[in-house]
Image 1 (cartoon, rainbow, N blue to C red):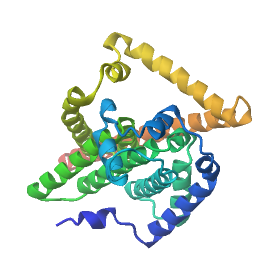
Image 2: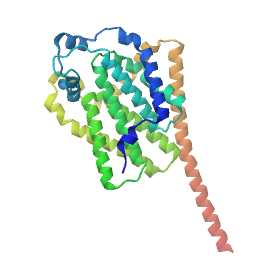
Image 3: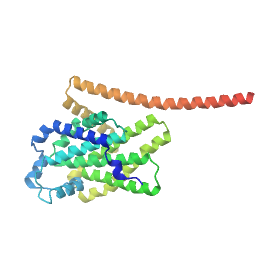
Image 4: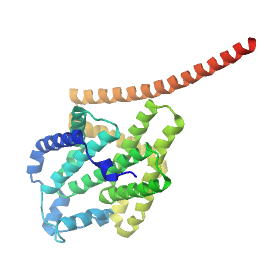
Length: 320
């Protein structure tokens, strides 16, 4: 029987890495935490005591803050939500190390710090209240994939697979109910996980299995979550979160891509740092593609050589 608690527990090296990641992140974000600047959402909640995220179809965010605040009205308990969020991001970074089999303390720590202190997370930590539920969404989504990856790599009975399947579904639906956008980390992990597994073992059938199984689980969790939209969401939130028509998907993708470039440029500037970032990104993508094709054709050439060797042996035996 798989011990789920043991699967998600941290060993001594991972515990040390978590401590390093957490405290370095706290030190780096200290000025942000102490700034005491409220976003519009936070300001409204502080002034009115409003505890409600249901209109954004995030019922667990409402529930968790009602538990923390012992009911209503909402009071400003910062920086506790932000510190808890940093802790959750730190644990999630160590879980990423578990997924990709990183057991070196230095690599775990440096990778975790880079993950938590990514410029794209700064806005999340700036929210006084939402930062905590965003952290919970990242944590539950990462935990879901960690358990998924371990189950995929082990032989289990049908009964045990069903139990763990429902646990993973629960975590993914919970992530959606905390903050929908954070569930995209599950897809990002899946992409790199599948690619690395294919590079290590070019078995096409196994690669398809390792990619499609987590994808199907995510798809089922979204189907379970969708009915909540009709229960909670208001017209404004519905318009804001609707998907683009199929004919506009390419234009939306291109516009979002250019928007991402503008965001990166605004964060890194238009100087050497920005150029270095794009150069590093291109090198990483090129290396990944080359490794993919190298591993694939190496395996295919090996099969062809083996096949030709067998034919040669058969021909030789017939001649004798």
